[in-house]
Length: 99
Image (cartoon, helix red, strand yellow):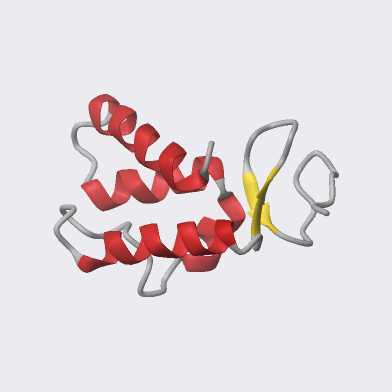
């Protein structure tokens, strides 16, 4: 399953469990759960959603586009063991280098 879909599906679950979280906070935490290195890279940039209150901000569209493009181009790959995503050429926590 692609990263964008996984992140946004998990976002719904987080919003139900943590009704006091901002939408952007839940989205960023969802991304961090599935792709911690990607979340770390966008932290503090224009793609960081953490402090946003609702989904009407252009940042959400930009983050979706970024995730889709990075995965499509092969710059973000998925670990076969844990299912997490990481940058091409990185080594995941299982010690598996991406090809």
